[in-house]
Length: 412
Image 1 (tube, rainbow, N blue to C red):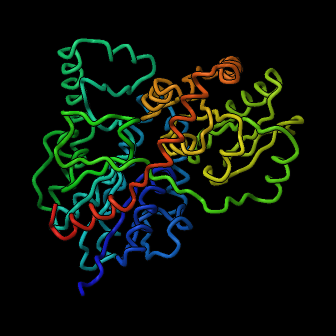
Image 2: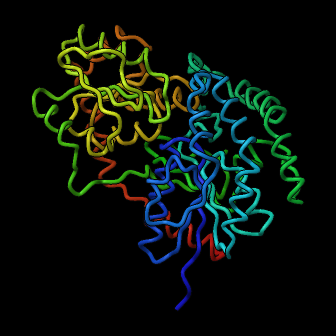
Image 3: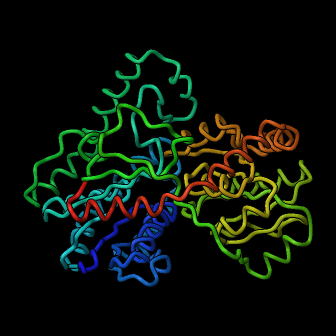
């Protein structure tokens, strides 16, 4: 009988980036493999039952998360890139402390420090991309900025020019810091951010289904889709106070703008205004506590598993983060996507194109109008039901575990 495989996981980002890697690790653990994490202490509770080694401190995480520029278009992307480059030495130290004979390293999109360390050590690497915006295609052009969806209708030659310009910017802005790190490891420099860094890995796992983003001929040959990493709770359990509020009236509209967004004061005000103008009950879910007393019919909770909460709700107003998006699909709840930055504009457009919700402006008035449409539009109800139905047939965990094990054994 062969020994268990030893797999090291290295997420980078918010809870939405951490949960899918934990999902895979639990799947591999159930198959008898040994898994460990390099992770910020902020998410230590997420990796209970696994060995883990800290990346930075809680203060480091809070310093990054508290920067309001993180949630601005363009500037937010550079903030993430700067944080990644700044963290490279910390990931290297943690990788060395977690010494052992690793059979596979698994990273999320921006965990380039561990990707480089794995390459230097000759360890197979599985890169996981959680959202389609990471994948280039002329036929299914990802939307990276607000108001640029019209680019999808442009000729292919224009789109290819966009990719060339994008490469020039990304290569100049991000690669120098990574390549200095790679030089210290004695591995060749990366020439292009997209081709060499973002598509690094012996295998690339895409954790979104074909009905959300169809496979494209430009994607790397070693990329495979496995569907959303959603968990189906056997017996949903909510805190007693939250359960009591939900039971006291009609299904509410959830307002949430991401677990890592600490600057949601304006979002809270919009939610209260929405409740007053629409007559809907509103549940705000955020780490930040709203200012002042909340009016009747508005309730706040700091954190709750969305797979437990969303089936109890009338609709979800959210930032179009990929984790929140997929859990709303699974719950069969209509979505109103108020994108801010990063992959969110692309996800919001995909929600709307699927007929499972609306991409709306960042205002209470837009949400009120969107909710009226959701209540009256049979096509949206049908789109929501269809997405939920196809998700009930999906279970990509076993096939992803098998893919990871093949990579670890050099069978890709």
